[in-house]
Length: 276
Ligand SMILES: C[S@@+](CC[C@H](N)C(=O)[O-])C[C@H]1O[C@@H](n2cnc3c(N)ncnc32)[C@H](O)[C@@H]1O
Image (cartoon, rainbow, N blue to C red; front, side, top):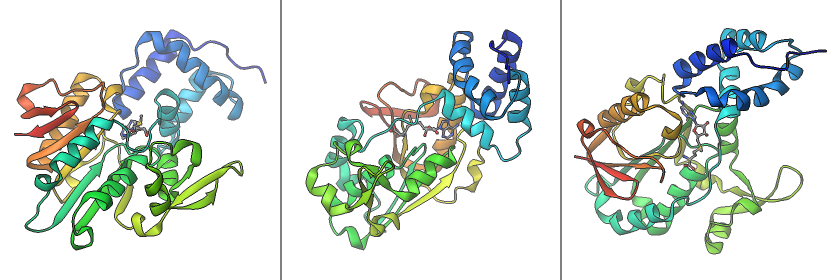
C-alpha cells in the first residue's frame, strides 16, 4: 500500500503538542526527521496512508498504549545494573544515617525504572550492605510509563551479556539460570527479592501525586528528566518535595541537575540532592 513519505511540518506540530501535553517532552523541529523515520514503520504496520491518520489513531487511543509506544520510539529505555558508580559509593558511605533506624523502615522510589535493573540493584545493594536486612521493613516502588518495560521488569529475566556490572558473587547469589529471548544465556532474579518491589505504571508528567500515601527516603529519578523541559522538571521536582522527608535524597542522572533554588534542594554529591 502506498504511504506518505514525508511527515509534514503541520502534522509534526500536532505530534509536538500531543507529546508535550501527555508526556512533557518538548520535541524540537530538528527531531522531525527522527520522528518521521521512527513512525514510518507504524504506517506499514497499521496499514495507514498518512502521518495525520496515525496522529488521529494515537490521539484517539483511550488505553494510552499507542502514546506509550510513541514515547518508546522517541526516548530510550537504556539502563543497566548499578548505573552511575559514584552514587553507589555515596549510598555505601551514608547507609547508616540515611534511613529511619528507629522504625527500621525504608521506602525508596525508582521513578522511571525501565526494565527493572535500577530497583533490583537497589535491593541487592541493601541486601549486601544493610545490617540485619531481615529486621527492616523495606519497600521499593518501581514505576515507569511503559507497560512493556514494567512487564520486563516484573519478569526479571536478563541476558547474561547485560549483567557485566553485577559482581560475580552477587549474580549467583541473587539470580538463577534462565533461558533468554533467543534461547541465549540469561538469568532470572530470585522470587525472594521480587517481594520487596512493587511495580506500577505511572506517568511522571500527568500522574496524580496524591496517590502516594508514604514519604520516601530516596527517590531515584535518573535519566528521564533529560527529556522534559525546565518547567516540567521543576513541576515534578516540586511534587517530590511533598513525598520526601526533610533530609531525604533525590538521585538524578549524571547529565541532569536541579537548577531551581526555590525548590529547597541542596547538592550533596554529584547528581545527588537532599531536601533541606
Ligand atoms: C533511559 S530510561 C532510565 C532508566 C533508569 N532510571 C536509569 O537511569 O537507568 C528512561 C525511562 O523513562 C521512562 N519515561 C519516559 N517518559 C516518562 C514519563 N513521562 N513518566 C514516567 N516514565 C517515563 C521511559 O519509559 C524509560 O523507561
